[in-house]
Picture (cartoon, rainbow, N blue to C red):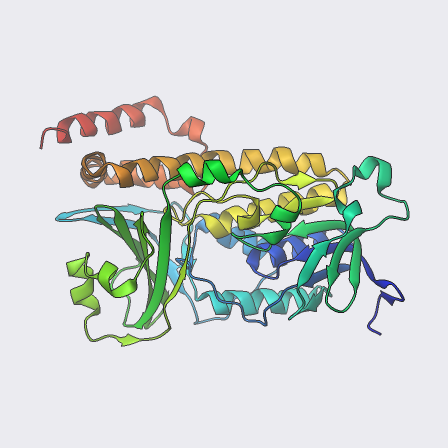
Length: 399
């Protein structure tokens, strides 16, 4: 019987279901705040891969450092900003002060697992949650210190906890078990987007994440090391197949011609998920499990780390309602930017106008990125900058 086991199963202070970056970040932040016994379970074995752009915004890098995660030297690439490529038009913007980084998801996960071991977090791989214990969804004020425990069933034993975190991703089963899934009728009415990703052994040709635009699709090129790039392709309205999608970006396809393939193709989708709420009883949702808009801005990891720290703080304070409020605040700006970007994706003429405007005003693009990576509050973006962007949109609207 493992440490902490009891005849009726294992009991801990915090149980995290899902051992990806969002779950591990929550566990690490909880340990930093004095939560004593933290258990993480996941049905897979590390390192866990996932089809994503693999770029970290500068504030995401800061959050990783705050969580005590040390990345392997020489195994990642610094990212200085964003480059938009829309036909003949290229717009470049730089991050202020700090850089982001690109890193293979498997290397990031391995580094977070190592940090979790150092923080004395109990990691149980190949362990799936099969059901929520009913009391998990009860009002914590009436039930937290009583005999009916929160937790989950697994194939081998129940695992009970004071608090339970669902970090089990886009298609979260715990979200569904808790009755927090969006209504199917609303899901059916929403446009569907899908993503595929593959790596190529080729020296990065830019220190920026490149976003190539094509009507109905985007290609994201992220440097992930000295001799490797990741290419993620997003498409609307259909499931994604890598080679036909890459052909929609002739200049990018030509650059990658002959490069050695460094990974198998992975895909995911439909991308957008919404939750009716992010807490119920003693359960909280974090990361993609708590709702996801789209990968179009590359903010997913940074957003998850901010949520994880807010959730750990609320758990330490026995005040899960504080997390629900913080979750809304954390997501308001990035989700708003994501929806604006999706509007550009659906309206090619608007997209071309915006890219031309940013190409004409690089300093304005820098300012936009400063807001995007939380270096500059939105209130300080300024009416003058908004007016400059509007001016260029008007000037380019007739071209």
